[in-house]
Image (cartoon, rainbow, N blue to C red; front, side, top):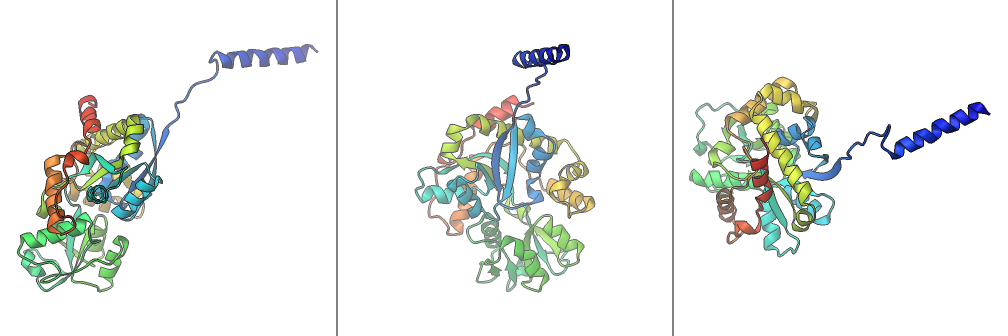
Length: 335
C-alpha cells in the first residue's frame, strides 16, 4: 500500500510540475512554407545555403521544396494554392497581371541579377564571335521564358535575326536539352550550371560565351507570391526575406569550396571539385544579387527584352508588381 501511495504521489507531483512548466521545455514549432523553384540549379545557391545552414530555421521557417520545371508550372502552383512562394523569372508575374488575374502575383525578393546560362558549342572557340552563329542551330529555351528571350535579345544586339539567320529549337523540355545536344542535335546549346560544366567534363560541349555577361544585369529570378498570401502572411514573407538576405551575405563571405560543401547535398551526383568550379564561374560574373531589393529600373529593362521578343505590347508599371518593403526592412535590420 505504501508503495502504491508513493507511486501516486510521484505521479501527482509530475503532473503538477507539467502544469508549471517543470520538466517541459518548450520548443518552438517551425512554420512550413511550400516553396516551388522553377528548376533545380546551382544558379540558386543562396537558397540552398539558407536551407542547409539552418538560416530558414533561425527565422522559424521550415521549407518544403519542390521543383516546377518551368515558370509556367511555378505560376500554376501559386495560383492553385499548392505552393505559397515561387522562385522564377518575373516575366511570369507580368503575364498573369496582363491577363487580368484578380489575385495576381507580386515579386518581393530578388535572388539573381543576370542570366545564369552559358552558350556551348561542339568545339572550343577561344576567339568566339557571335557572327559564328549565323546559319547555325541553337538549342534554346521555352518560348516566352526569360532564358530564350535573353538569347534572342543578345543575338539581335549582335546583328543576327533569330529564327531567320540563326535557327533556334524551342520545343524541348529544359531537362532534355543537354541530352539532345549530346545526341547530335544542334550546333550549340544554351545550358545552366552544373549541366554546362558537366558537358565540358564529358567532352560533349565547350563553353564559348556567358549569356549573363552578354545581356547585362536583369532581375533574372525573384521570389514571388500571390497578393492575398502576402497580405495574409506578412510575418512569414518577412522571415523568408530575412533568410534570403542572410544567405546572400553568407555566400559573399565564403569561398567557392565552402559554398560547394554546404550545398552539396542538393547535388549529390556532382562532385565537390566540379561544384566548386561552377560556383567560381558564377561568382566571377557577379551572378547573385547582394540584397533582395528588386530594382525597378532593371525590371523595366527586362520588360524591354520581353517587348522586343513580342511577348507583350507595352510595359507594366513596376509599382504594380514589385513590393520592396520586406527587402528594405531586411537590409535595414539584418547585420
